[in-house]
Image (tube, rainbow, N blue to C red):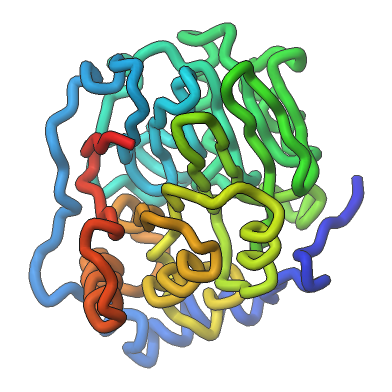
Amino acid sequence: MPRYTNLDGTTPDKSLGDILKWQVLDRITGKKAKRGASPRPFVTPRRPNDGSALARLSPHLTWIGHATFAMRLGGKMIVTDPIWSPRIQTIGRKVDPGVALDRMPRIDLVTISHSHYDHLDLPSVRRIAKANPEARYIVPKDVGEVVQGAGVDKAQIVELGWFETHREVDLSVTLVPAQHWSMRVPWDRNARLWGGFVYASNEGVAYHAGDTAFNEQVSREIASRLPRIDWAMLPIGAYDPPWFMQSQHMGPEEAGRTRDLLRARTLCAMHWGTFKLTDEPLSEPPERMREWWREQGKSESDLWIFDIGETRDL
């Protein structure tokens, strides 16, 4: 297998010592406990959604949780980085999925940004494949064999390199770079490509960043090579402690700067409030995002911070 790097030639490789410092030493010194404690009990806001709104043929976007969205665009029902499972290994969900998987309409396309367990969840893929045997899976290079492990037919999988495009009638899906890395087991570190996706149709252009750190080169490259983005799904959580996370995840302010570099119209916040993966309080990412947005004097209508299960028209 090839070993992939980011556009700038780097990978955010952290050693076992770094992990121990974060998980053990910071806990002993109290840093981890202090940051993780919320000033008040917090549950990510959730709107009841029985899936009926998703059956509409007009374009719309629903936050299922974490990096999972259900999007109707170009006549297709698209699911991004699907995770409906109650836990990622030992980490449980803090809030149920916005729409139960068995209440979803027929799924046409599934895009998976990379092989990390919170973005490529095999139990969820297995359930989708069983209920939607004709669904197509669009993934970065060398991720296909992992998806096949969930019982997906190889003929239904499309692997792309950066800036390669797959077309489905009125919709094109292009894999774009992300500033990240990949691993499922110790021996496949960075052996599978990662990225985000741009979905272009006559109804508009959406972007799902997958998992990414802030990187000006990446954002400018996407903006220069693809149509202007209407809806940018950008991660705003899993950023603390910065010394460990900044090379692989972005925070709220960096998400705002990324939206500006992309020249995108609307920022759709994701990757927060669903799983407690890092040290910041669950409630902090949207609070910081809204504060930065106000300080920059931006229009409130251009910042979409969804409730879990909320559907918005595109």
